[in-house]
Length: 159
Image 1 (cartoon, rainbow, N blue to C red):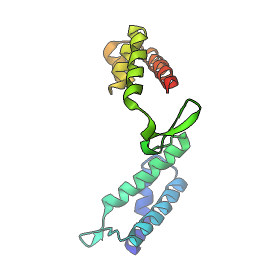
Image 2 (image 1 turned 90 degrees about the horizontal axis):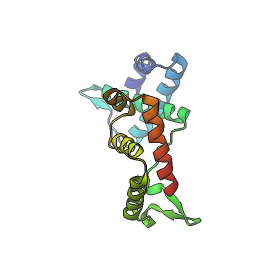
Image 3 (image 1 turned 120 degrees about the horizontal axis):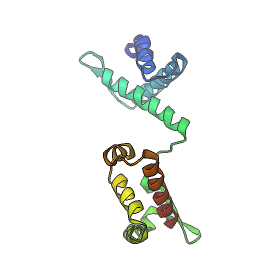
């Protein structure tokens, strides 16, 4: 751990390149020390050829930075196994949900929608970004974005 602490300024400089203030970079670096110490106590070896594994330290710093950004935006990462779906007034676990019938119900509802709405949803849902779709189709970004959002909200209500 002493080897890691000797490079303190280097770690803070790295975190600063992520676009945060020096103070926030210091905080993230301190959190990294705690995380690394806990991992060392569990038996993690952070050395690489008699030096520090810089890649592991970098990935830890980057992960802590991304966690901070998610918290700021209110983004919560959820494990599908922990999701509870409200159905018929009571909570069910993910194992109790019939995903096949839910999928069929969504497909049925999607087929009832206006062709433009359905096609925009399908294209974006298959992985093409709205921005890329807009550039390729010459359709305004916000038109595509709000169409996709509207369809997604309708389908969410089915759950």
